[in-house]
Image (cartoon, rainbow over all chains, first blue to last red; front, side, top):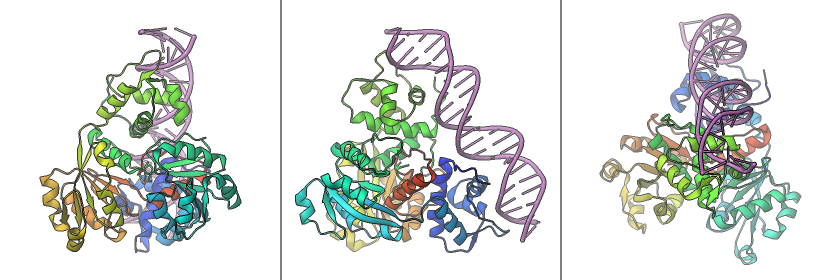
Amino acid sequence: MWMNQIPGPAIERLLHLLRFLERLDVQFITSSEIEDYTGWSSATVRKDISYLEGISAGTAGYEVGRLKEVIRETLGLTEGRRICIVGLGRLGSAFLNFTGFEQEGFHLVAGFDSSVNRIEILRSPVPLYPTYKMAEVISRFQIELALLCVPASEAQRSAEKLVAAGIRGILNFAPVVLTVPPTVAVENLYVVDGLRALAARLSSKKGTEPGIPGKNE
Amino acid sequence: MWMNQIPGPAIERLLHLLRFLERLDVQFITSSEIEDYTGWSSATVRKDISYLEGISAGTAGYEVGRLKEVIRETLGLTEGRRICIVGLGRLGSAFLNFTGFEQEGFHLVAGFDSSVNRIEILRSPVPLYPTYKMAEVISRFQIELALLCVPASEAQRSAEKLVAAGIRGILNFAPVVLTVPPTVAVENLYVVDGLRALAARLSSKKGTEPGIPGKNE
DNA sequence: CGGTGTGAATCTATTCACAGCA
DNA sequence: TGCTGTGAATAGATTCACACCG
C-alpha cells in the first residue's frame, strides 16, 4: 500500500525515530521497544512505519539498518541538498565552520551578508557573497535551503529576497514570524520560543511532542 | 466558554501568533489579516482565540495589546520561570551571557558542568556548579527548565540527572531522542534536524507548520 | 455591513482489535 | 506464541456556515 501521502505528524515522528535509531547499536527492534523509548503507542509506531515502502519485519521486529535506509529514502534525505547561510554575524559565521552538515548530506556552498567589509574579512571554507548577488548565486548553484541568521529587524526582508531568488526552504533563527508563499517551507529555531513552548506545556498540562525543531517549532 | 483544554496545535499557533503580534505596530487586527500573514485560515484563527478567556473583539477586529496579554496569561508566560544551563562548552557558555532570557521572563540562575576546571575558569554572570550539585541547586532555587547543551554522548545521562533532580522541562540541543517520563516536557532544537524537516517537506510535498522550535523536535 | 463566535459537518489522525505470518 | 500489518472504530482538529453584535 502507498497512498502517496504520509500524514504530517507521522513525518515528524519518523524523522525523530530516525534520529533515535542512528544512536542505537542493535540489529532488531520491535514497535513496543520503540514505545518504551519514545512514548508513542506501539500502534502508532507500526502505522507510521507502514507508510514506508519496502519494509518487512519478522518476529524479532524491524531490522534497524534497513529501517533507517527506508526512512531516509522515503523522506528524501538521501539526495544531497545544497544550502547557504544568510547573515554572517556571530551565529551565521559560526555555522560557516560547522562540519556536521556535510556528513548529513547537506552541502554548504555559499554565505551571504550585506556588509562587503565583513565578507572580505571573514575566513571561510566556502565562498561568501554580498547580498545583491543572492538571486544569481542561488540559481547558479541550485541552492535549495537557507539558514537565516540575520537580526530580527531584517529577517522578513531577507526572507523575501530568498523567496524571490527561488529558495525552497528556510531555517529561521530570528524570533519573527516569516510571511512567505505556501510553496516555501519554513522551520523556526529560536531559543526563547523553545522555552516559551516548554512553559506553556507546564501550565496547560497538555502538549504535543514537537520533535522537529522549529516544531521549533 | 472554557473547556479547560486547548488543543496542542492551537497552543503552538497561539505561541506563534504572540511572536507575530509582538513585532506588530498596530492597534487592531482582524482574523483575516492574520490569515494573510500566517497562512492559517481565519476560521482557525478565530477558533484558537476563542479558547482564550476574557477577550472580546469589536468590528475592527481584536485589540492587539489585550490579545497579547491574554495569550501570555493563558499560556502561563507571565510567571517568571527559573532556568539553568547544563554543559558549558561552546554553546552553553555562549548562553551564559545571552541577555534575551531576562526580558522574556526567564531567569537564568545557574550553570552546570562536569569539569570543575572549566567552572573555575569561566567568567559568568551567574553562579556555576559542578554536576554533582545539580539536585541540590535545582531544588534550592526551584529551577523549572534546563537548556541541555552537553555533547550527544552524554545527553541521555544528563537528562536523567535532571529528571531525578526534579526538572520539569528540557530544551535539548543534542541530536538525540531523550527518553524521559511523560511528566517532563522536552523540546528539541537541533540545527541539522531542522534541515532534515525541511528536506522531508520538499520531497513529500506535505508539511505541518512547526512553528515552535522543537517541533525538533 | 464587516467583523466575531460557535455548533454542526467534515476531514485527519490515532487507537483498537484481530487476522496472518514466522 | 509474539510480533507485524491493517481495516474499522474512535477521537481529535479544522472548516463551514450562519446567527449575532457594534
